[in-house]
Amino acid sequence: LAANRSSSGGGCGQIISSGRSGGGYPDKWAFAPMDSLVDSWGLYNRECVSYTAWKVYQAGKRMPYFGGRGNAKEWPSTAQSFGITSGSTPRAQSVAISYGGPYGHSMWVEEVLGGGKIKVSEYNFKVDGQYTERIIDSAGLTYIYF
Image 1: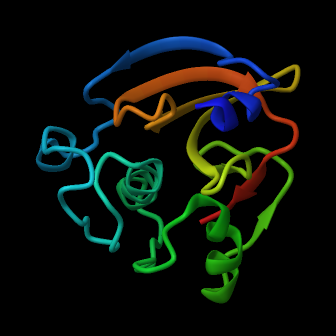
Image 2: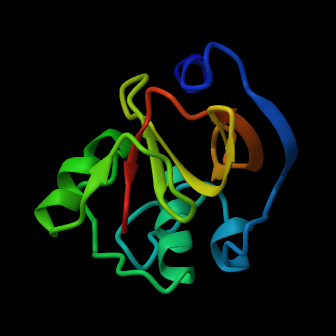
């Protein structure tokens, strides 16, 4: 949790909503016990990476099978191996990666708000397998442009 908070300038950012499910994430994964199922991309349910893989797929973008390379901090290099680019400029419908903690954290960029802020949706920000929407600082993150 502390590592995830550090990805937001040391706090949580502005939490807009939070709960058991959201963002269109399938009920079969959202309501199963956390880490009890493997999703279509080889990632454990209710983890940040499973949710962001779902959002890439839901947006009609190419989401390769990332099984076995599922930690968020691995995603930029894994994406690059599939020819998917990344950078430091936030874009709507990209995946934002923070590198804090042992695993990092992935978030779906819903909207670029200006003033250095982005609106993100995510799972497991609070390390509880729950859905959250927040407004956070955009600096210091890597963005994957699926």
